[in-house]
Image 1 (cartoon, rainbow, N blue to C red):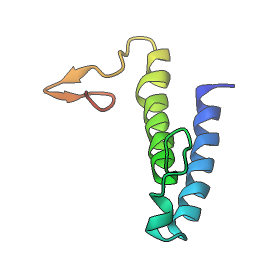
Image 2 (image 1 turned 135 degrees about the horizontal axis):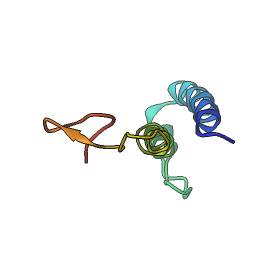
Image 3 (image 1 turned 45 degrees about the vertical axis):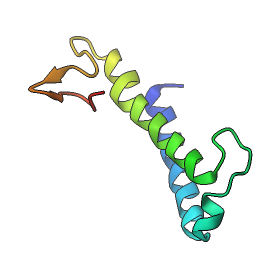
Image 4 (image 1 turned 180 degrees about the horizontal axis):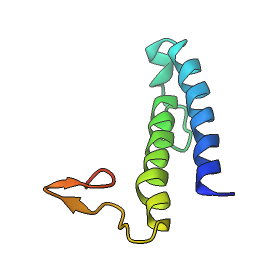
Length: 82
């Protein structure tokens, strides 16, 4: 599976998950469910963080001549700067 295919799959899952969360009361979204990232809201943030990694680190590192996260003028040229 390529990074593009993984990203496409992750995006579809994220959108469906976010829509379902938007239909719930906030108390249910942030409720500790003893899951990997405790609440469903935190799981959504984890999914978004993984997509960010795929684009800004995983995919860009496969392109010759591009160094992911390269800083240009204090900002990251190809992704967010940590």
